[in-house]
Amino acid sequence: MKISFLLPSAYGMRGDVRATLNLAAGLASRNEVEIVSVKRTRETPFFPVDPRISMRWLVDSRPGVRHLLPSGQVRTEVALWRMLRGLRTDVLITARPSLSVQSARYAPREVVRIAKEWSRPAVPGPVRRFYPRLDAVVTSTASAREDWARLLDDELSVHAIPDALPAGPWPRSRMDNRIVSAGGRLVPVKAYNRLIRAFAVVADKRPDWRLRLYGTGPEEKRLRALVRELDLHNHVYFMGTTSDLPGEFAKASIVAVPSRHEAPGMSVVEALSCGVPIVGFDGARGPAEFVRPGHDSVLVPEGGDEVEAYATALLGLVDDDRRRTALAAGAIQSAAGHAAGVVAARWQELMYGLRSRE
Image: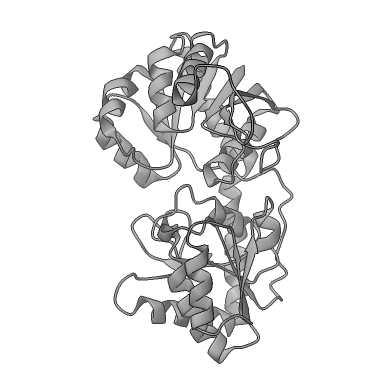
């Protein structure tokens, strides 16, 4: 079976890109798999691509690259339309609502068309109009599946399949470094400001512990200013970007997830695979969708004295080696459900079932 994945850009440092590449690699052992990137924004992808996967792009958007007319968005839309109209594949999986709408409109009807979703669409009108032409929607969590089922009003089957980790063996934390890590884009929804404020309490009581932040983004300047304001320059480190976040998490003994929303939540799943307990907030769309509190994580209620409560949760694990170790063992068990082979098998079953209906 030939499977094609269509992404806005397979070259970026996004969790949904990472999740897609992991799934593609898991399926490549039994299928012909290709990644189609609408735009090429870098010389090489940020994340490694399995050599069994073929990769192509439609529009070269690297800095300094010149194009003939048409230009800009028109060029992108024309290239996408041409690709979809001439697509020869068995299954097309699109990784963004805007692309899924185009797949529904222009991809050949004999192709099984699946929309892979991580969050609700910003503009639901085109989704309600065109998604019923697709064969299925797949979400990463049960709550997202319920959201999409309500939005589509049962006009299309919606399935929940967790995101895949890369093929093992996964790096494993020894749980002996006095390090708390956090990873992801430095954007407001990740709420790193409340993590830094909470860690100020930890650093005051346990000055031998350090916080490492991985990633870049528009909030970096403000977060650095906050670190200076709280005099944490010897305790909080901005580590920049990395294509091997699991390898960095494996150096930590706690992974902090202070975000208000976690979609797709790959950093949480990758931390679990390293056998590192999670400390997060118990928000409606936060890490609670990916963890089991008391088994692999500690979750703190949002609101009220949330920063103080978060600091208390961190200190509780900092001071309790036995509890950290127990949660670490639970994290490894939780990660097993995201193993590439397990997730690929569920996708394989879904795709064969959809093809048999043709």
